[in-house]
Image (cartoon, rainbow, N blue to C red; front, side, top):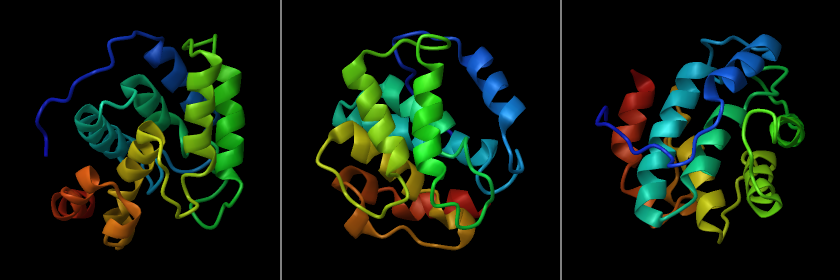
Length: 163
C-alpha cells in the first residue's frame, strides 16, 4: 500500500495550510481523526481519483480538511459543516478554487459522515477515501456505500488501517 501516488498538477501553499490547520486543531493530532488518518485518506483518494478521472486537487484538500474542525473524536455531527465553512475561509489564502470546485469540495466535506452515495465522481471519491479508513475504528467498509473502484480496495485498506 505504499506505492507512490500521483500528485495534483496544481500547486498551492500546502505547508502553510497544514500549519494553519494544526494550530487550530482541537483533537489529538495522532488520534483517530488526525494526521495519520488524513495521510491514508489522501492515498486512497488519489489512487481511486486517478482511476475515476476525478479532481485530484479537491481530493487532496478534502483529505486535509474533512476532519479539521472536529471538537471531539466522538459524535461531533456538525464537524462537516464547520469544515466546509473553514475550507471556504482558506480559499484564496492557501489555495485558489473556482466557485464550482469550491462547491464540490464543500459538498464532500459537509456531508462526508452522512452515509450517502453521490453521483459526482469527485465527491464520491472523497467519501470513498474516508470510508476506506474505517478499519482504524474496527469497522469494515461496506461496498454498498463505495464506488466500484473503491470496493476493490476494501481488504487492503482495512488491513492498513489496522496497523
